[in-house]
Image 1 (cartoon, helix red, strand yellow):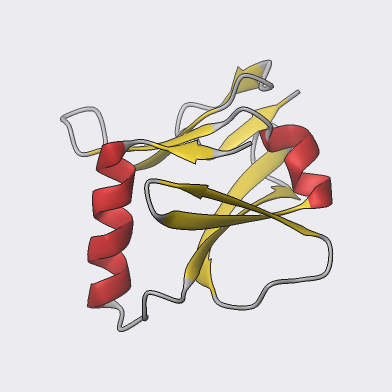
Image 2 (image 1 turned 45 degrees about the vertical axis):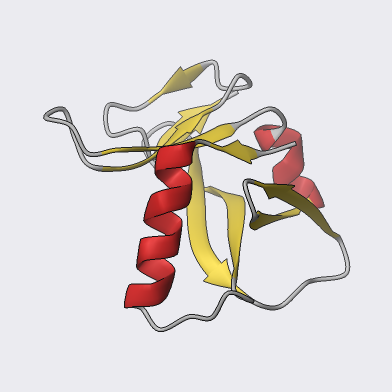
Length: 108
């Protein structure tokens, strides 16, 4: 399961409206090869449900995750930080054995 914090929900709604997406656009969270730690997070709006997607809903936001990515993302919490140490979405992933300094890539 993938969940989101209240701050992440607020930012998702704000961005969805700003970019002209409808409430039917879901958030797709995926893992791809790359980055300085070997695996990278990918986050985008998506209205297309794929055959092998797992769908989670948290705080009224639908989160789409393909089966392969779910192996790396199970239990992950999507957060948003706008503090002095950085601004942006952050993945709190219990499966990551290490992460890079920017938080956009990880290893298991």
